[in-house]
Image (cartoon, rainbow, N blue to C red; front, side, top):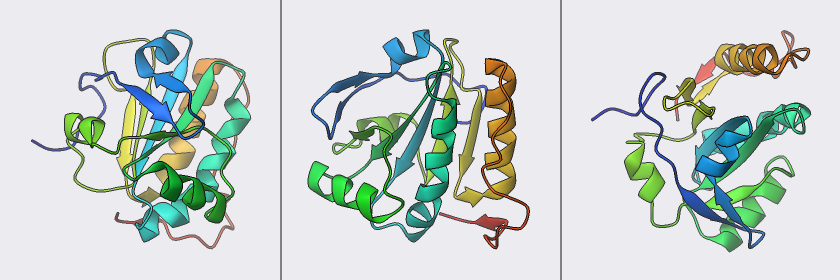
Length: 163
């Protein structure tokens, strides 16, 4: 089965965060939009992608949350978040890969945008600057706020890099 994509059913999970808190996708989705960023700490494309994900925090407090979903242990995840972009959004653990398997991931990074509905709103794999700006626009429209440009036009980042 291929990776779940927009229009496919949402699969909810409860994760342990590296901060010791419990994170429930079902509960969080009731309160607005949730972006899940699945990654592996040794993935070079994930490392490249990470600082750009921090820009989505501009929507927090307006009905949006972003979580990094690590396929590694807590220690490696904390070090990764600090080293690659000094990421401050929640990092949750999928050490047993239950969510990874349920979402049928074939590569990382893979990103999902979810809301209170039963289907995935948006999904992308790898690094895709156009898709990141597209989903930022989608988030802004749903929240009724100005869009944040995730990747500027003059940014030297490539258009696409597979994970």
